[in-house]
Length: 230
Image (cartoon, rainbow, N blue to C red):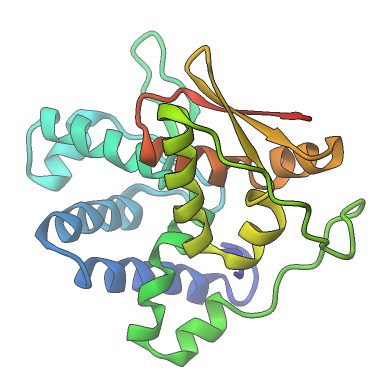
């Protein structure tokens, strides 16, 4: 997938592509999804700072924009955070509002099934050639051996999270997520075993947020995900 970059000669079109993807995703869903996505789009167009990836606005102002009460704002913003669409960059303190950001990669992953509803041009722009590897990345992705699934509640959560991850990005799933094994829950976090230190380090550096979001979608009570090498 292509990153949404606010700068450069294609910056403006990339912003429109993101909003288009959100709109297509909303229109393909029920009224609850449509309402939530419309509210997020209004917040993005009215208050989001693309250059700094910042959204600093209080609940009262959001409530006024959405024409709802603050209780509804609190509920919907919590839902958007749980989806990974909104992230907390700096927690508010002493009367200051929290500084939020957009989980752009997560939004693109979740809206991808509806890109084709817009047309092949949007699919090509957002789902084009993969980004170049970063220095130090392994040039060849070799699938590691599959790890067995756990049993009990934690095993069921990881099995559900794996199913979700496999539908989002099959290549990343086969190479990096499928080899992880459930090792239970410790201190409210899902513990996963990786087949090597390199594998664990790569997932933590590049794919941790996807992993956490998938796990928390399957079990919102989880505080996060921890990896360690076998």
